[in-house]
Image (cartoon, rainbow, N blue to C red; front, side, top):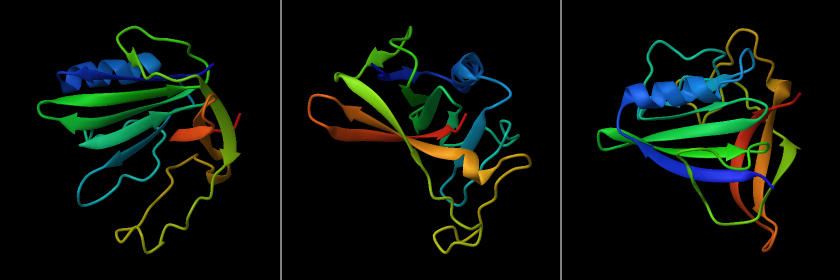
Length: 148
């Protein structure tokens, strides 16, 4: 069984601490979003952190964040964790299914300001991880992951 859970944090400092806690160096990738642009895939947390939305992912999990008031709401999706302190489990009998991902060209029209993979990031290693409820066979979340 895999884990899907959520929590709220009150500050950027708490968010940064959780990112560091779940980081599995050296294989973390980051993707940050602002209303006017995206960071592209980064192998380290960019200097312009925090962003209103973003995610950190590695082979074991994806941690997403979204600004909510002064704090952030977080979603943790993991293939290996069964539960984790501070996160409220989302009800369901979760199973994780890894699939190939299609990486678009950097000049794809859906990214009007361009999209770049950072140094050392191989697009062919990026995969998708579907989180499906075993009882209903419904996919509720699609996370990014790295092929091992």
